[in-house]
Amino acid sequence: MTKPSGATGQCLCGGVRYRVSSPLRDVITCHCSQCRQTTGHYVAATQALASDLELTESSTLRWYRSSDTAERGFCQRCGGNLFWRRTAPDAQHVSIMAGTVDTPTNLKTVQHIFTADKSDYYEIADGVPQSAQWPEQKVLERP
Image (cartoon, rainbow, N blue to C red; front, side):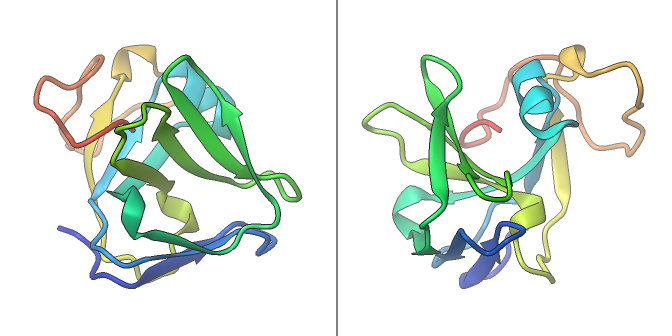
């Protein structure tokens, strides 16, 4: 399921606001150590084509190169974690933190990835499919 085009969202302080003109992918949660350290828990992300993401306010948006292949977009004022994208020149998608999408999102969680890396203080018991590492079937992009 996807949210119809025209989804909007923002960080906590509104320093970063966006609009997505294409439908959003359903939510995938990532339990890897980088996602946990970036957010303080695990990441729940939707995704869209990068060309369909319009930043309507971006004065406080900063990008952090979190690995050799990816970077994360956040608000430098409130610390809100908003985006994840590959740094490859041919990268076509941007992951959007699902909690920043304005409600109603009409999205649902469809997969948990990197569950072998999850922390020990919670259980995943929602019945949604899990992958210990990278999923065998391609799910557009990570997370």
